[in-house]
Length: 318
Image 1 (cartoon, helix red, strand yellow):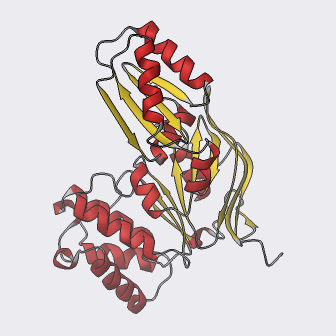
Image 2 (spheres, helix red, strand yellow; image 1 turned 60 degrees about the horizontal axis):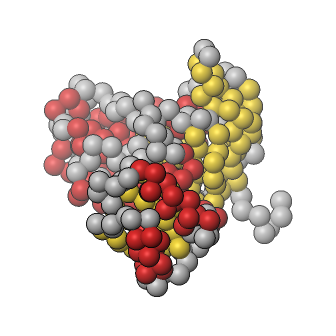
């Protein structure tokens, strides 16, 4: 292997999966580098969870292949699966086992000795702030505590690859920071794929992001590179209140024609300009020429959410 090329921990090639007439994953190919944190983003129903379930062997693809450290994952064989830890979006714990018992049991199920399983359990209990809950039954934990335990269970056998499906769902701010910091601590030694709807969290933890929609990859790169791919500049938000829709459309057309990518969302117009604050005067002048009164004009840096909406649209998903 070329020493200049990053080692690939997890590879998917032309994955396809249907549910009846629904094509959930459509020829998806993906390489996850060893030791990186990959943010896996997409609207509801985009195919994220289906892809993760295929990557960890829970779901067989209709076509395509999966490789773990270059070794194909064959249907019906568990070889290689011990290298993966999965924290599913739906919380899966044992209600009648204590926190400590669950972690030790999971470690033993993956072949750890009793001593090693206990050591890993103790370490994860401390890392996820569960010390005073170690002897509590799973069913007595709050939703946020169950989520933290759910993540810890994926990590107890110290897998080199971890798949986290919405790991921060239902967590309070303090718990979100705790989980975020733990995920960051894995960088460089564990390969992490994390799905999330929280663009801010993705920007804070991911080395690269993969945005998918309708089962296809729309973008895959570092966050800065993806933002740069849509052009340079800041985002201007214009709010007009009760304005004429045709005048707003004319404004969007004019600004877009002048090289400032522009979209309309109801009575709000968003555009991108590389000119910074000096662009405000020209924007206000263009609006005034069309008889539009700007009620609010703000400038901000482009976010990952801007890219996400541009690629996947504003339509609501089920």
